[in-house]
Amino acid sequence: MPTKVGRVAPIPISAILMLLYNAGAFWIMAVNAFLSLESITRRKNPSSMSGLALLSPLFFPFQLDRTLIAKRFYTFRT
Figure 1: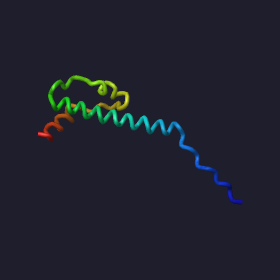
Figure 2: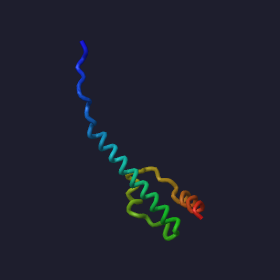
Figure 3: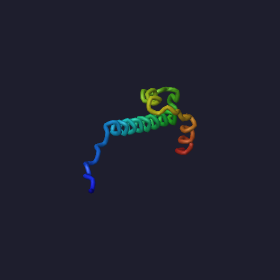
Figure 4: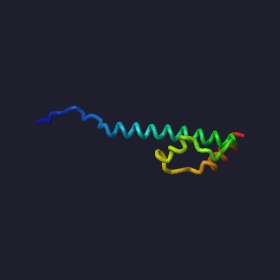
């Protein structure tokens, strides 16, 4: 006898929350990288930390060498 096909299992709430958390972490990381690059390339005060820069270790624990990235970015733009 053929088995009765039930309805598709709903997406668990934990999967939706995980996707939202990852999307939020990605956008905070992208905005933080843009702000830090812009502040370093303008040579105002490269050592100043914005609020997003203080929050970024919660979302992105691996800190890249921002001065190296900024030097590359700055030499590329000029």
